[in-house]
Length: 63
Image (cartoon, rainbow, N blue to C red; front, side, top):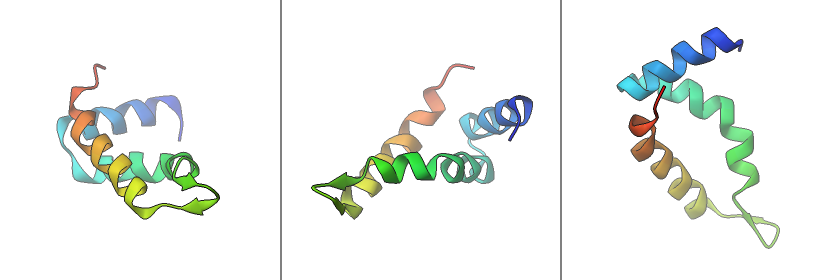
């Protein structure tokens, strides 16, 4: 995804567009998953917690 496409997608996600939000989550899924391991085991609750906070806070991003 190039810079301009990312900016448009992020603006859509911030504005509440569900499809754009899913594109952002998909783009960052490897990074999110990487932070969901505790003692070498994937923690599904932590994964859901991170996704929930992204969903709640994305509308506050300043672009």
